[in-house]
Amino acid sequence: MCVGAFDHQATENAQFYGAKYDALAHWVRASDTGLRNSQILDTAGGSGEFVPYFVPRSCCCASAAGYSAVALERVYRRWLKHARVEAPVDDLACCSPDLMRVPYSFVFVQEAISLIPEDEP
Image 1: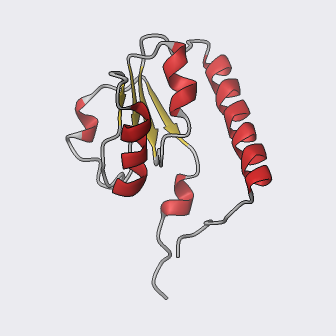
Image 2: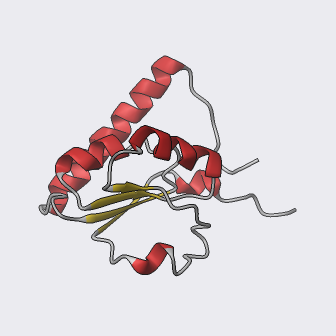
């Protein structure tokens, strides 16, 4: 069990992700830099739900990193032919040298708190 983990029905999930996309768009506008030619690290990227936001904005690379090989396999299947998308498997708590080999322009973190294991009693 992870802290903050919860499930949604399809309608609620669509609303939930719509709100997340709106928040991301707000952040990108507020940064006043856009994403063109940037290196993006989507921490706890899961199955790559935000890759469709990053890629059309002409980023150099969108990395959806996480520790679930199953989720990241979905990224590879969906974006297999897209050279600017990668999905490294990594324990983000350790920040391995392989993950940190790229000087990322933007590091996107949303809901990573739900992946932190509960403390033992």
